[in-house]
Length: 151
Image 1 (cartoon, rainbow, N blue to C red):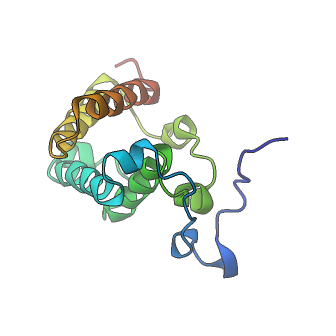
Image 2: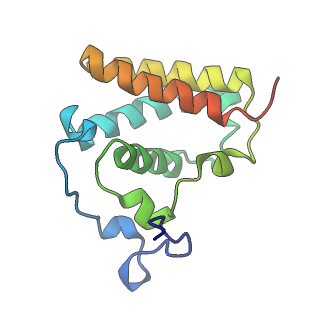
């Protein structure tokens, strides 16, 4: 049986965005909870997007002038990926990261800028060395996977 979410089911009950109907977590012994849960991931995303906002060239990659929706999507994705609530899936369906990033020019410069901002944001979290290494490894691999241009 296919356990992938149906992308057409992107709204919660009563046609309201799913984030208004949070999906309860079942396993609280995940990376997400080990590092501090929601406040840690909120801070990570806030710190990351504060750097994006301060860089006009990099910010131009984002289709929305207001970065709050992008920050919210990143937060929901990361909390789900690391074992927290599954609100991203309930609201937006399967992450399909490469497909969602395909319309944007992501070359080595953009990849490295993204990684630099994420590293700086991570450094504000005071994670244990093990958790820091695990998270950073994921971000490095993901950033390289999102690159869709050679130059």
